[in-house]
Amino acid sequence: MSSVQKGRPQNITVTTRVPLHLKQRWQQAAAIRGLTLTDFLITAVNNATGKVFEEEERIELSERDSLLLAELLARSPKPNERLTEAVAKELDNMRNY
Image (cartoon, rainbow, N blue to C red; front, top):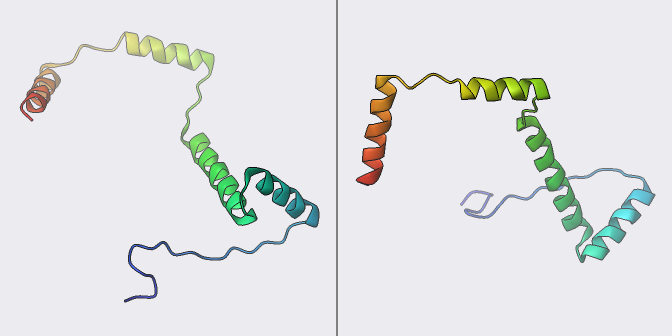
């Protein structure tokens, strides 16, 4: 068997230097939540990471752009025959599934 056991996540150690007052503050916060410092830091970093990716994926439009998009969607062209047939075929496939 390899050094990484099948089905078990591989853990690594991350080391960083922080001012003592930050470590003490983090320990207090972890204690309030009933967590170890490690669990508290993993949770906090994971939450922050999720927010970063969320912000990167989000598209924010100005009010003007939002209105333009709404107008374009409202005036979208009617589907052509090929699209209508494809949708009908897919709906039929879904019904027969």
